[in-house]
Image (cartoon, rainbow, N blue to C red; front, side, top):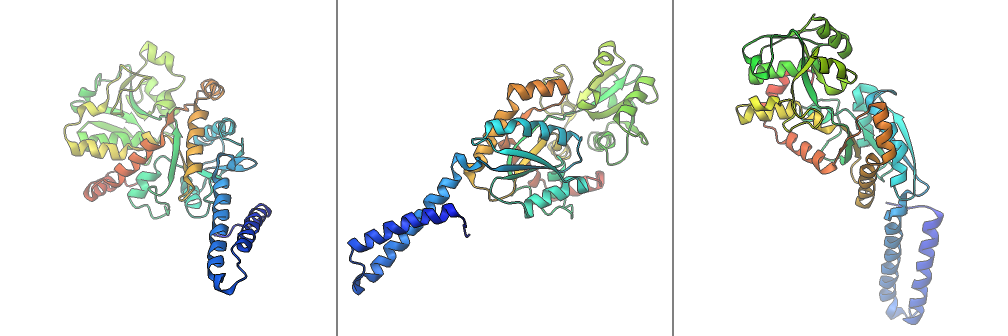
Length: 371
């Protein structure tokens, strides 16, 4: 690696003066001492280089720098809105208060953004990316368009907790999750690649539930309206799609049947988990793989090989920014979930995905070919 610049030349010049001074003391003009003087000179110059490099890795590295946050989706998307809010507060929590800009790179459902960051972005801590929470699953399944290896990304943290629920209408014959094993539940769906289809399809295969899927709806709001009207009996979707439906939940027009998380969900502590109906380790493991994307939230990563000092600065900065009272207040006003997810948990999720047995991955490919 070659470092070029005025500051480096000045720094090296200072150490060259030190070398010349020591050379005079050691009588370096004498031929018999030439080898020793060359060794001393090399060592001192190397020390100077390392001291300069270390100075650049110090907390003031980000002073007068620009950080680029690449978003793998179009402007206005959930990932974009969340990233722009984070970018507003992040400089306050990074030593040197760098300028943070957001760049959209929406091609191929964020795969292009992930590949660019992995292969071409500077590895100095000035570029990070957020991509689809499904991308690690797709990489494990062998999606050919993905060149990035999630195991080599440096995970910085994530925001949001997009947990998934199944909701039924007032007249639905299914009253409890246990009823799903004996009674049919008609649910609306956007299409095969959408969670409204994937979730009931997977539960039918893995647990033996009796969802019947009606496709053709244009989006979650249209399905919710169909449930309220009694055209279909339920919908499986992200909890965020039901924001603004608090009154319908209070008066019983809509009712949450279960959620898809293994642990209790603070927002809906009274709602049971579908994992209560899992009977075998293989069932649990398959569900964990398919629905692991929930836990990735909106992830943020550096490309490989960024110096660890800068990684720690950014990890602390993201954690602090998501707890900033200003950000918390803005997120609440926007009804935007900015729940913080720690990087060590994200790294463990990636490890778990890559530990999935090959035969189980084949099952997932057959069950959810679009994943």
